[in-house]
Length: 114
View (cartoon, rainbow, N blue to C red):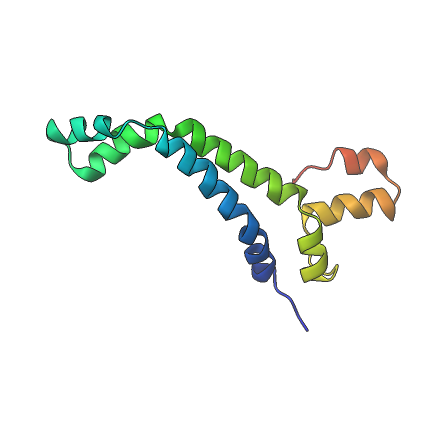
């Protein structure tokens, strides 16, 4: 059975998206809805008030959701290992092989995409 990279990405997104949504919802719920209503009462459309009021005030929540998702994606080891059966190389698999198989500890600790 051949597993493609897209199925691995779907597997990683399966647990990263709910966490990101929960973090972002927390930031949005702390926003005062009257600010968006005030922008609309001053002539802004719903999209303009969303882009100029809601998103700038929630940027900290959006950035933290992005960072948590990226951390989950980079640190994910089990999902690419199980779904990819060791044939599809993700960063976590490459770092693991540097440490265990090659015994190149400086390379595994300082691995960068280039």
